[in-house]
Amino acid sequence: FLLRINAAEDELCVPQLLNMSCKKLTRPHSETMLIYTVLSLISVMTVSLNLLVIISISHFRQLHTPTNLLLLSLAVADFFVGLIVMPFQIFLAGHCWFLGDLVCVLFFCICGSTVSASVVNMVLISVDRYVAICDPLRYPTKITQKRVQLFVLMCWIYAVFYTFLLYYDNLNQPGRYNSCYGECVINYNGGVP
Image (cartoon, rainbow, N blue to C red; front, side, top):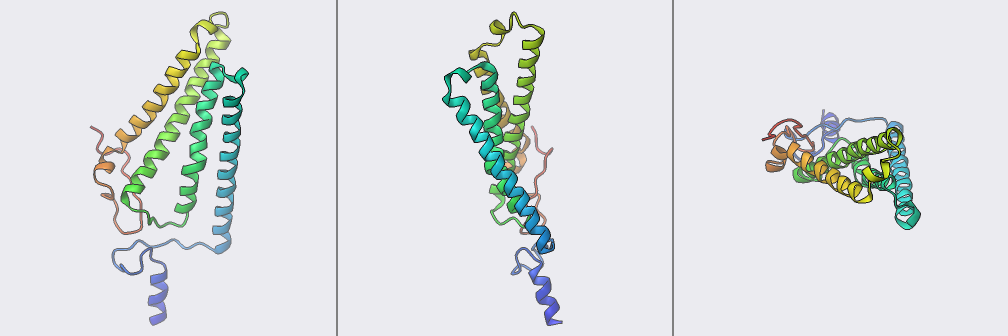
């Protein structure tokens, strides 16, 4: 019976808090290592390749075009996904959250902001390509460097504002939806004024 209690304690996120701790999901070691390895490789590739795009477009003057500015903004959003979001996802693969309730909410805000910025950037790139194909003679007057800079700025402001509005209730009371210690739970649609 004593061995069973110790085995049960090993499966808790915070063994000292028996009744208030979340349970860990235990996976075979080989499965855990495979998940960590694949996610780590994806994260490193994402950071490296997007950094290459950022450096290339920033360094070479001939690449400073409106379309490439949109691609640069998309690369920055995806760079942050690889640098911040993916490592935390690797950390979350352990199934216990030890970084506190506020960091949990901020993590989801960063995730939401970068993903929203990425999606809006893809929409802007689609509009840019549509205008370039359907109205090529007026493209240089419609899609100028200043307009694209303004739209990229609006894209990032929208992404951050929308995400913080979406998580407003969670930011006011971090950890409100947690049922036990060691979990990170967010309410996506509650509390939007």
